[in-house]
Length: 110
Length: 117
Image 1 (cartoon, helix red, strand yellow):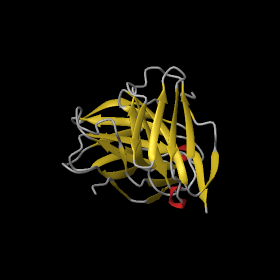
Image 2 (cartoon, one colour):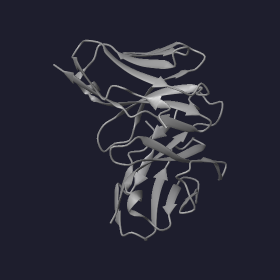
Image 3 (tube, rainbow over the protein chains, first blue to last red):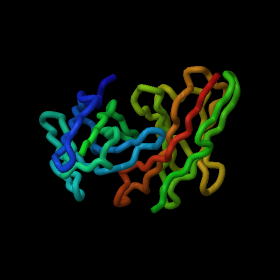
Image 4 (cartoon, each protein chain N blue to C red):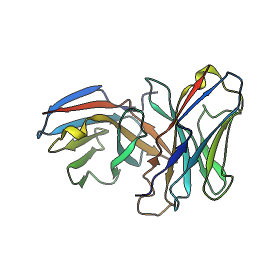
């Protein structure tokens, strides 16, 4: 059941440049979307979120864009830093639960 | 900064044994969750808990699983008779009361790695 999809398993970006991570979803009942960052052997760390009634939310270097007609959201990180290297998960909220994507491994190199 | 904590970090058990995974949610949070991640797979929702009762559960959360808030701080997940396929990382999460500023945001603990032999 692929309700939340992250089609790029990995992304490599040079330090200082923009990282763009993408996520698609199929269920129009999702009312809230979140991005989490995860390091190996740790739990997901909340990064940024967006309500389905908005199309953009910004927090420092992180911006999330939501395109409801395309059922697509993206996370922009600018400028990218080596410490951003991790796996990024997109998640959608419906009722109480979060539905996660498969994750995108971001590597930021000097 | 407040955080969710989980114990133990790693639990090894024999098939058929009971295990209890423990979590201490963020202190002013009222909603509690368990998720799991089997190696190489997605993070999957198991159960949500509010006001001392289950508010939602997934198909995975069958009669072998139970949750409890035995006191004002702990939240536990019990697996009565473990199976090989229960081997996974189990994550506890919590969120604020409905209407709270970050109600929709769930904050995760570091996880317990369960290995069933």
